Length: 342
Length: 279
Image (cartoon, rainbow over all chains, first blue to last red; front, side, top):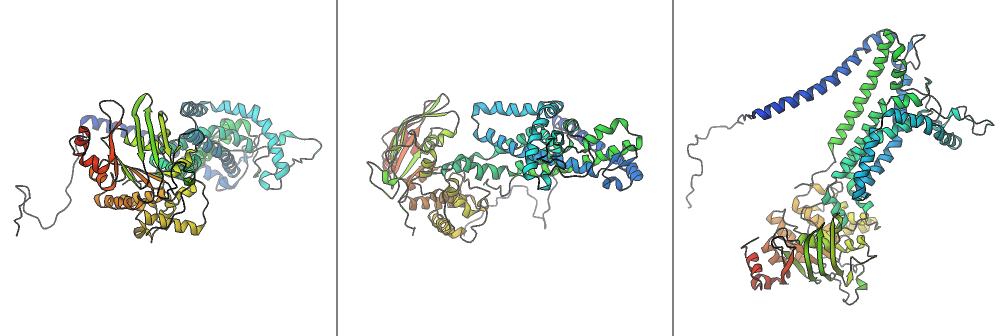
């Protein structure tokens, strides 16, 4: 029989009956502690400010609901003269313009991001990224001007064409816009939610593109090379490596863009002609969004009406927070089945 | 044991080389390589005949992997990469004008150091991923038989035949690597390049891969980069020793039959390296 050597360290206490986890204390250095508390403090300030904005706006709901009741959510008109205030059409219009913006922005952002990350030669890449960033730096009033003076009149012809050939679809219908009428009334087609959405799209493209670029750039080189080594074309590689990997970023970036589009004010205010009728005809003149409502009525409201405006703002705030949170979760969740690491 | 394979694509125009169903003849002719202005390979000439496993050995940073990546045109994916010389597959220069890079890579497959199955695909989909990527149409029964055939040739069939729908990432590292080998075989390559395929694997998985290499040797020409001298001695029939001395580009110090390199090396540096005295 072999002799076993006792390998236990000298001075070990005799085996207890049961072992239990021991407490481990970390002791941080002074510099670490200062940095930790500093960053925690600043991070908390951001949360507190956001929370305070939400609380302040949410607090306005109380007098508003007291005065206008639950009709505040179902009433479509906002008429300070007769004191009939409701946000039904306002919310509908907000979502309508935002979704139109995303419908325009999504393909443009996706293709821009794919081009920059996969196809552009390396010397052009930096320049293109700078250009997209520059789009984000243009003040929104300039986009608004561009929309009012250039896009409005030209896009109206596209709207007329859509109405003429697809007008039988309620979504593309323009009431009163008889394509074969003797006199063509262009103004029926201008200042519409569709045109406002188109301009807002330009403003959210940089955000969506940046998020998508970020995730495409992280698609693992090893998988890209694996695809190429099988004789893949570049498009085949994009389809089977980059797009599946970037799915979270594509969805998340689009939703972040949606969140921004929901709150866009200046461009929508200047382009959209105010109208409280409940209608889902985005090609037709007129509409309203929450941001536009607040901008329009802020100066001329009684204190009760001001509360109602802020309450409308709270609803917008809540929707935006919700959309952004969902987007953040999707972006950070990453891809499914990611366990390629060994 | 293995299914009979249809003739390899393009093997008919073999030119001076005979039609060879067991792989293709791969020749590197005075291949030099640069990254930017930094030269990493100095006129490498090496003949890699069919039916043979060629091992590339040498210390880290001597350009073995770069050389391997030149053999199937992955080198050019690096923006600053340049090269000189010719790589001939059955006598035809793969870098010639008008030579399709996707076709070249299809005929010269590659298995990487780190297993890289496509995580969004199942085991079965991973095997036939090459068909999708190269736009090759195949019906369901062709796919099914191709999946089985390639997994058998990769030595993985018995372990995964009941869960072909499971994600490729759910396999162990060694199984993933054999999945990658099976995936490479599915596009019917003439040559299979392996870049340290076992360096991330445990000894059991390594042995399985080496067995797989042994059975594939009759079917495709194999070139393997390895840091493991015993592995080179076990799996290869010919061997090339790469060395980059003091900032000079990598060169082949000695190449020849594996038994000669290991038992009667001509160059003292080769003797030192294979006996573990440096590197």
